[in-house]
Image: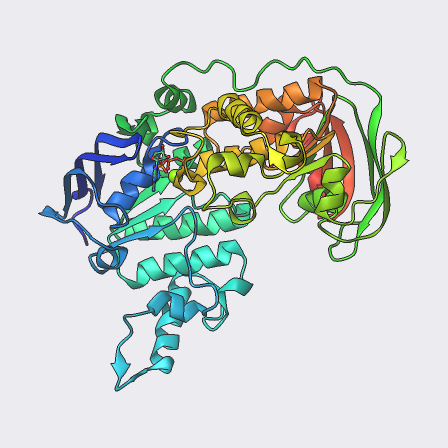
Length: 500
Ligand SMILES: Nc1ncnc2c1ncn2[C@@H]1O[C@H](COP(=O)(O)OP(=O)(O)OP(=O)(O)O)[C@@H](O)[C@H]1O
Ligand SMILES: [Mg+2]
């Protein structure tokens, strides 16, 4: 048995600067054996950067890292892995064209002459998967697997290195509830074996449930480290934001007008979405609730035309619109913020301004081919301000922003297309509590301008706090509709189970 709760990892006075940003300012973190240590902070607080300094992706400017009492300074992530430090990234970075086994063992499998022993590799992989309860064929090509499974492969890789320290950077943002439970079982198992787990997430409930200790960072600095058992949600929020956040939702003062959007008999070609009909009024915020796989995202995708409709009619202002592809939909004044925005929406090598204005270029045209730089700057500035995007400048490359701030840029991009109908899929996923408030306020303001908003969210309090009406999906069908002010979580859950 390991000496439980002895110090495993110490990071002392870590500093790290990027051009124009002091990302880490004297941050210290101590992780004990056999514990889960949560790392929290607003978007851009420096959580991922701190972990990347540990993992050999960034080199720290100053400070000390001690692993089992010995100073270490990994130059590459391979070196970190070989010394028992593993990291499951916010953005999975895998060789997608190769299979599962290759991703786990690449570059280190014992060879027999010039050959790797495929058979032993298969057996070893199977043994780890068995241990972790992962049901995946090790020969599957990565690109054909859903994100959740790819993440499991990453965890298996960490385990295969017999890692002592495992960092999870927002691991659950695209997992279903069931997958989250599986992940938590694995994390608890690793903890019981004496690993030190560092867990980054914006989901308060998760943090309070899984962690033993919580460290909060703000603006690149350490703020507090306390036992999770003594923490409350209010206290964490206060430490993160630096002030009391008395309300999690802004007051609702949007006025609901006449019918703007009519959806009739929406049935999908390639999913089980069947016969969905509803209206959305001008100035109304309609929520789409339901379990994972109930068809919420499909409703948005079918309206927007990125998924193929089998039948059904969509009318805007009483006139039929035919969105056959995204381009039609944008022209017809629809906007869709997708759930997988980091994978599908980001032009990494372009800067913030380009990423912000790319879908609304028409707005900036002056005289033929020219674009007004000034107008583009103004729009980008609006977006940065409205959502408190943390960036040194507009010409910073988007990929150097923190994960949550990248998401805000993409949301800004869609808001700038002046849509009449906004389709938002999990608009606050990966966004910190303070910025969530700003985004709720933006959504309410858009409704006040007379736009129709449909938003999918897995967070029930968010639907109850922001929406006027909530439609509940179940098994690809519309199971019912409730008034957000009068309903309860129980009522929504009951409807969600209706055809599931
Ligand atoms: N490669 C880089 N180049 C320039 N700046 C960077 C780079 N990586 C991070 N930063 C900056 O460092 C700061 C901290 O970013 P970091 O990604 O650590 O935040 P985070 O706490 O993980 O936020 P989130 O919750 O949004 O993921 C941000 O201001 C970010 O823009
Ligand atoms: Mg991060």
